[in-house]
Image 1 (cartoon, rainbow, N blue to C red):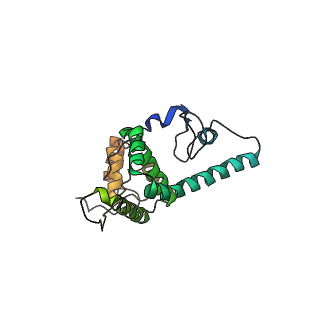
Image 2: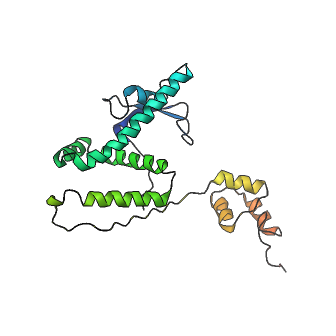
Image 3: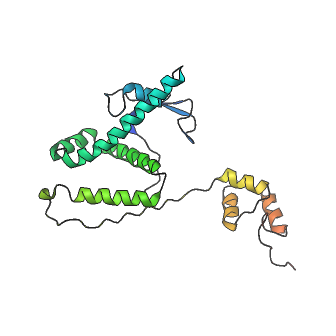
Length: 216
């Protein structure tokens, strides 16, 4: 299971500023793209995606978004050529130039983009990773002494932290909470001692919950 960490993205961006959000849950961040040569995206594409460039005409904005989609689509298709036909030495030079940290960061970004593209379908993502790793393990067979790879095991298990605010909002509305959800609110400090005592003295331990055993 992957360790919990915040993505750093190293040199991919030159700064982070408070500005309009990039996507749901982005906390209103706008990032400044690194000044580098064109890749799949042009420098103008990067400025647009990062919120530094806006268009007055809706059609111009739509054209920019369509151009980005086309470039990304064809860039993704190019990976079928890259992994099959790019010379091994050229591939090694490429990743050496990136360095270990930035290589890890860009691969994490690729996986995130792919997972979103698959609508967060974990089973489908597992299958695609399995087939991708299997293909890579059977590439460059002349440079390996082992036999042909025949199976790859990939398992994705995602755990979600509880949303404390939503749980407390449900509690305040009198909606049913489970024992574990009440425990989360207690551990988070959202309940005062008096509230916990009131819960213990009520007929039910929490709104909509099961009745307590009869008290003497």
